[in-house]
Length: 146
Ligand code: DQA
Image 1 (cartoon, protein in one colour):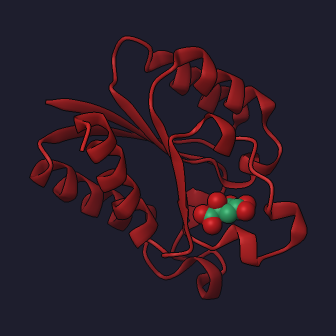
Image 2: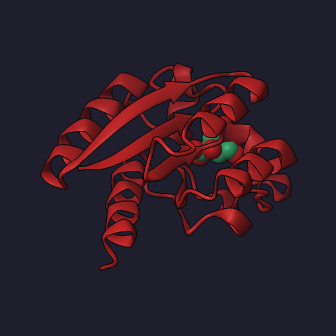
C-alpha cells in the first residue's frame, strides 16, 4: 500500500468561504473526502494536514521521512515565499507533487514564482479542486513508475 501525506498551507482551511470566484465552493473537508475515495481506488492511503504556520508545515514534511512514500502539497501563499518549505522537501527527498486550485501563472506577478516547483516532481494548477485529484493521480503514477 502506498502511503501519502497531503499538506495544505495557510488559509486553505477557509476554502468554501474564501474568494469563491477564485477558489471555488468546495470546503477542505469536501476535497479531502474526494482524495480519500480516489486514494482507495489507487490502492493508496493518505493522511491530511493543514496549518497556517510555516514551522508546523516544515515539521509535518520532516515527519514524513521514512514514513511516507509521497507528498501532495498545496503550500498556499508560502509557495511564493518559503525557502524553509522547499528545503524541508529537498531534505526528506520524498517525491512531492505541488498543486494549486487557481492558475498561479495567470494571476498577479508575485504568484508566478514557486520556491517549491524546483524540488517537486511536477506542478498542477488551475483546475480548481480537481487539481488535487489530478495531482494525487500523477503522484501515484510516478511512484508506481507508470
Ligand atoms: C493557492 C495559490 C496561492 O497563490 C495562494 O496564496 C493560495 C492558494 C491556490 O491553491 O490556488 O493561498 O495555492
